[in-house]
Figure 1 (spheres, each protein chain N blue to C red):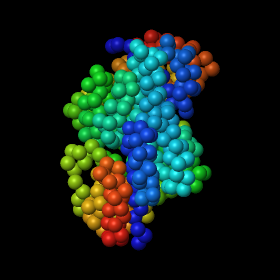
Figure 2 (figure 1 turned 45 degrees about the horizontal axis):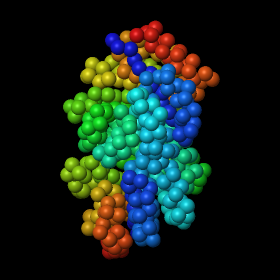
Figure 3 (figure 1 turned 30 degrees about the vertical axis):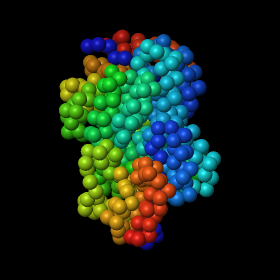
Figure 4 (figure 1 turned 120 degrees about the vertical axis):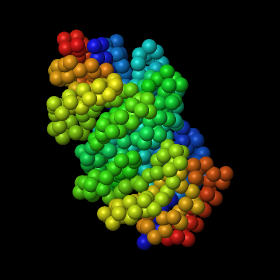
Length: 215
Length: 215
């Protein structure tokens, strides 16, 4: 089982605060994510700025795209992203269109699992060629008190068995990682658990230490 | 029955091409929409630029927000939007959080109906105080050949009966509006059907004439 990667979700309100985070975190993490909030605030410029600064990093743009797959994929892949996300309730046609553009750039598309989705839909995602999903405990759901549980593990394992690379996110801290021991998680994604820490670089090293301990 | 409004969806790839459209369309339409594509490309700057140019227009930002309701709502309402959209598969907590911010700004939140949604969810949206939905024939679905049909009318009527203001969109041209005769549509939303026309102002007048004819 290869070790899970560590991804920082840059859900900053502007590019300058995102760069304060990447200045201390870029060397400590594997994947830089232009979070949805940063996308909405700054647009694709956030992607091109990160690409200019970190030419060799994997960059993912968390668009949660729901429509216009070709156009929005072209915007972010031409700006330099490696991966982008689509929302799970997007039409299959949108996912396919985004994937076609992604592949032109040697990139990939991840399905963000939010709210109500079904394994029947997930079968269809596999059929159209998608291989990455993000298992998400939503930010607002987390604020509303929803915790990680056995039910999450069952679903994640089933997605892995279907052939998906599964990334995991949603209010994660290093102390949470042991809960997922034994599952071949693709990426652990953290936002405030990294750049919101008193010492973000140390927080990233704590994540890496937990990954080394359990994988 | 009050007359449906006309909304232009600015799904441009950059703010300058959006402004080419609004220069000729702003006086002809009721609502200016910062489309998802324009949001992704330019960020909230697109909203603040339109607000600066058109202080008295209703502006809606089609974020299709799926999470972080408070933060993303604050971004776009502080930039000057009147309404914003959330995606139908967003957690209720996200919708509620966005609505709370919207109301602080005397604004509103619209639920974008995409892919699989249910009337049970719609009941819940009413319970948490949402009153606007956007009935959408998706762009990629439209490209895939899906047409307007009696099934759409049945669903739109049922949403109206539930107390929703229903806007309608998805590859609309003036010639399509008669199909919705008798339904109190809140807004007809068109993008390429307006700014993609040879004469966008005339296309808007054609929409308005169709609205006058059938409502």
